[in-house]
Length: 272
Image (cartoon, rainbow, N blue to C red; front, side, top):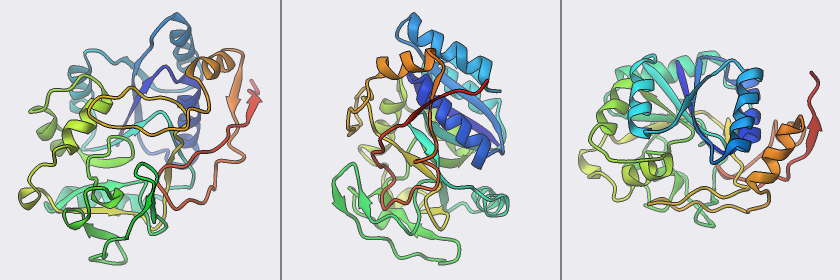
């Protein structure tokens, strides 16, 4: 498996995600497509190089770098964004079943690490959402094309938190124009591809394994990004450069009814 992470100016949050991957999802080679607005943010990514075994790749030109990274990777790709974190372990056997099904089932678009039977609320739309009727209950399959447009259950091209096949990603990326991750997500989802001709099924685990913590601004394009703006990028980067990290004590094991949840960060000095 190849794990691709998108990151801009958020080395401290990326560090949290990478630590959680080591703890709960240690199944692939990790590549980070990153961008830094200035030298201070670049220093944060230099620390990432020192502290984590990852391939750090300058993000621009974004489409070219992304396609090359996918082409050089394995048959299964996991895409993540730097404000997400694994909160519970992904066991190897269920993951193997998911990836096998993705390869052999032509009706299956992707597997979600964020959705689960606990998801009943949409953070981005501030409303409760109805769960789909699972086609095969034990495997948590559902038809995303029959879900409302403003439902997390009907949003198949989430660029942070899905498991894909390499072939599918290359097929859809080559005919889209995009310059950064949020533009990519927006163009893949709005307007939707014709639902009647699109691969109709998605799958997930029994509960949320990966949570997005939306606490600071993401650049907007065709996709909207709600967030609490609790922490500035500059503040978090300065803390990271001073050898602080985000504590996992109040994050790992978090219970949630949404794929996004605001959590107050607690900071601790790294133990080197």
